[in-house]
Amino acid sequence: MTALPSGSMKLGLIGDNITRSKSPRLHRTAGQLTGRAVTYDRLIPKDMGLSFDEVFEQARKGGFRGINVTYPYKEVVTAKVTVTDPLVRAIGAVNTVVFEADGPKGFNTDYSGFMAAYRAVRDAEGPGTVCLIGTGGVGKAVAFGLIGLGAETIRCVDLDPAKARALAAALRALGSDTRVETSGDALSAAKDADGIINCTPLGMVGIGGTPLPAQAMAGAKWAFDAVYTPVETQFLQDAKAAGLTVISGYELFFGQGVDAWDIFTGIPLDHAALRAAIQEEGQ
Image 1 (cartoon, rainbow, N blue to C red):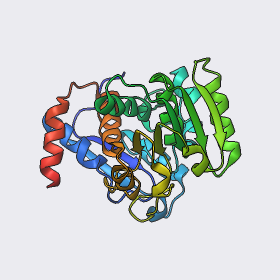
Image 2: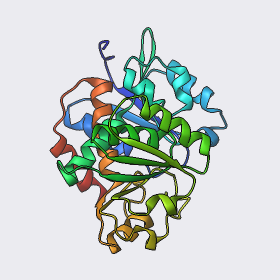
Image 3: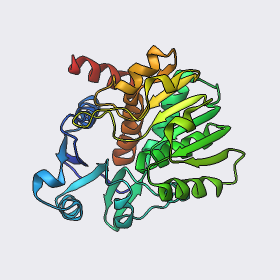
C-alpha cells in the first residue's frame, strides 16, 4: 500500500438510492477516533447527471483515496480495476476501490463482512441448507461466504436464470463439498431450508417489499437480510415472527465497513469504540 496523502482524506460511495447510507458516518467517525480528517461523499450518478463511468473518473482524478461501490454497480466496476485476490476475481464483484499511483485496485469486503456477521450471531454452527435469493453483486459475495462457512447446500435463486447459473458455476469451480443448486422460484427454494437470505434490493428505503411471503419462512432456523436501510426490514420482521434467528444487514454493513477502512488506510481501529460512537451519534 502506498503512503497516505497528507491532510484530509477523501473517500466516497457510488451507488443509487444511498441518501440514507450510514457509510459516511462510519468512515468519518473512524477518522475522528484515529485522529485523521476524513471526508466521505455520497456520489449518486443520476442525481449528478452523469453515468457511472463519469462519476468513477471524477473520483479517480479528483483526489479521492478510495471509494465504496454499492448497488447496482458492484459488477460493472470490476472492468475498471485490477483485482489481485483470486477469490475476489471468482466472486466477480467489487465493493471497495483504492486509487493507487499505478491504477485503481479492487477488493470485496462484503464477503468477509458477511462471514463475520454470521459468526457473531451463530458462532460455529453451520449454515446447513440455504436459500439465497438474489445473485447480483452482494449475493455473489454472500454465496462465497457461505462456502467458507461450510454450507451443506446453497440454492441460488434469481428471476434471471442465467445469473443464477453463472453464480452456481463459479461456486462449483471452487471444488468444495457444498452442493449448489439453482432456481427461479423463491417459494420452492425456501422449502425445508435451514437459512433464508435476501440479497435483492427489496426492502430498501425507496423500494420496499420483501422477496418471500411470511408463511414461506416456517421451519427455517435463521435468516439474513443484506438490506440495512432500514435495519428492520419486512423480511426480518417476518423472520422474527416465524421464530428464526435473525442476522441484520447492519452487521454486514459494519463488517464490510471496518474491512474497507483497513484497506483504505491501514490504520488500526478500535471496532468496539467505533460501534458505540456510531450508535450514540445515530440516537
